Amino acid sequence: MTTTNATTSTGKTGQTEQTITNPAATLGKDDFLKLLVAQLKYQDPLKPSDQSQMMSQMAQFSMVEGINNLQASITSLGTTNSVSQAVGLIGKELTYLKDDGTNGTGTASSVSLVDGAVTVHVGNTDVALSDVLKVSGASTTSTTTQAAGA
Image (cartoon, one colour):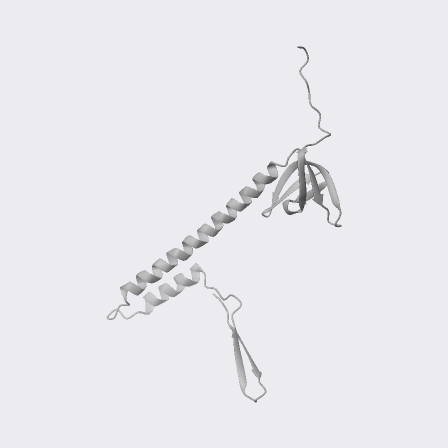
């Protein structure tokens, strides 16, 4: 449940002004369910609440839940897309922005996903996808093996 903090101050006219702040200004699904249960618990059995209002509230709750699920799916899709892009860089020559502001180059050898952040391992450095400046074809240092005999 959220907590509301009240602060008071005295203005230029000597009147007291009260500002109410709420650090968690949004209600979550748990808060909504608590309010719904409290409303049902304390309603007068001889005067039940309006059914259309109850259905409207349930529809709003379902919509909010659907939006939350959609947001989680989109976030997951974005992470999957980033990993896929990073995997496509393995074996490619990358030019990337170093922490000191200079450019570095090297061949991408692997990909890591830690706490939702995708990094490409280049030499001894982990490079964020956002720091990759240029991607060239296969590394010039790679060797190819030819089959013996003809």
